[in-house]
Length: 243
Image 1: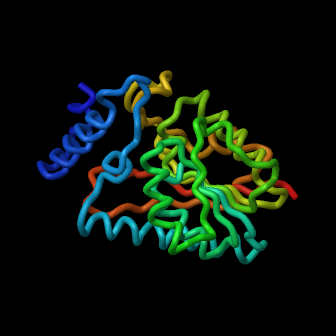
Image 2: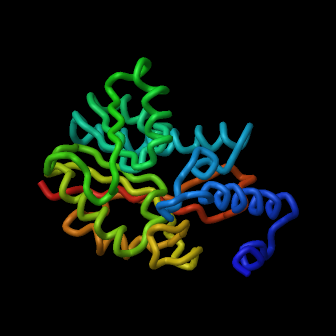
Image 3: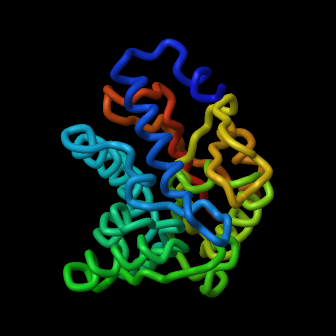
């Protein structure tokens, strides 16, 4: 039923991509004893070939725009990427920050990030964690904190806990960038069970409310490759901690 509802108005190519995406994510969750959905490379990236290259370019382009905005206002000595996956965006943070920490709870993704980045970018440290809401770092440790399509796959309870952690670890005057689905009608899966695969869009005012006392200073629409099946893929939201 969910698949049929999602398929409304799609071309055959878009429908095929949707089916492949859902099958890959389903397979990634099979055969586990802990009953928690586990993110793999195939689940994190649902594009290949030219589409993947274009998406990577668009994400780096837009993220650089925000990092330039931050850099013009304060130095970024230390940056954090919460839910960094295999490090595809953590490497960009290293262009602006002297030290970058990528927090990742999936062992396979964390190990891939270490193998990719350890020699080429030693300023990036990949930290394995068990809980996104309990990060091994000091209060106000980071000048820049980021989540990129992480909170949209968490329950409300877990999302608010992670946001409290973001607020705790962001230095006075520092910035936090959230790139998440902001279409509140985009919902998939059991939104109350954090062990499962779910998608939960929340509008910008809701994130503004949860992020207080940080204030929203800038936002823009996230852009994906034009062949992607979904037209609305969320927003960038840049918040600043009071000085």
